[in-house]
Length: 163
Image (cartoon, rainbow, N blue to C red; front, top):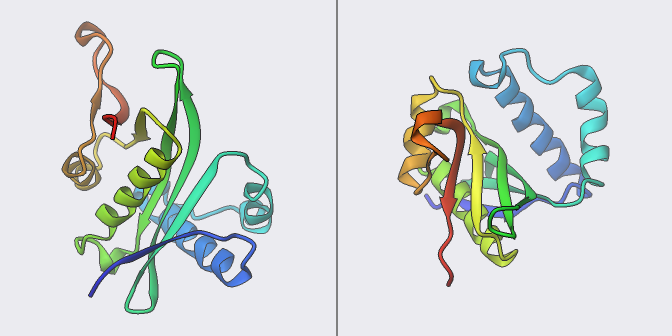
């Protein structure tokens, strides 16, 4: 069983439907708010996100089934004067967690960030989402701290060394 991560094409209606279903799956989870996507989001998200500059997404497939997604947005680090890539959503179907799918999605995001010349990846995580935090740390992410006296932000980063 090999996870295959494929860039998302939201102009492909089948992929768009799968992506929206996975995102709704995440939104129904307590870590995604627990309420699912709103009717408005379900009707408008695919159409509007197609037009968002700097959107990068992928679907994870295992045994012919879509089992996860990652949504990233290009940003910019003013301190480094270089682009960055923010992982906004990462979703793995409940019954498929712990099988390396999240790691494969994060690896895809890192590869995309390198292609874009980014200095780092960032993401946000809920403080009690210990399983996700362990996965992010396994992939090389660390808590983001500017000054220890100011404490940790709930934003995590991974510095990308020059290749």
